[in-house]
Amino acid sequence: MQRTLDVNGLLMDIDGVLTTSWKPLPGAIEAVEWINGRGIPYALLTNTTELSRTALLETLREAGFNINMRNLVTAPTTASAYVRANHPHAKCFLIGAEAAREDLAELEIVDGDGEVVLIGGVSGPVSWPDM
Image (cartoon, rainbow, N blue to C red; front, top):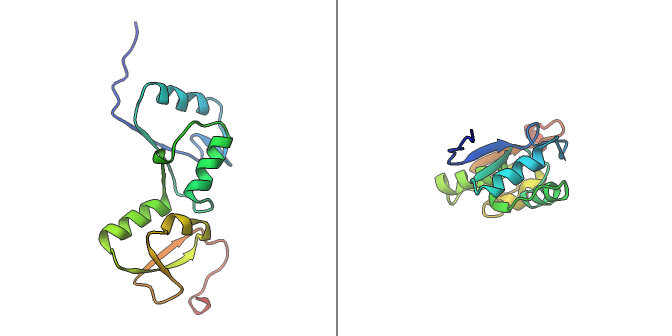
């Protein structure tokens, strides 16, 4: 008996679900191909800020995944969309997440006195006087 898959869409985390340290887990590439072959809409999610969305797409493609930019949802792109929708003219102060600057290009990033503070990917100690 053949089963029918009645799915409107999928949300999948990347790290730990499809990859570990950006290397594909067994069967992950084939699973994404299976989903692509059935035309099921999906998004790949990650909270990483160590790679820009463009670099992440390239990394995943080099690992063998056949995906498009529209399939990637990252913390910085989500933060950017939120700020644009809720604080459209705000000046944004970014702490850490330097690789994410590309994904925050639609925001006004300032070196201080921001109305919105975005924090991500801080790799060392941070104190307020250092800013």
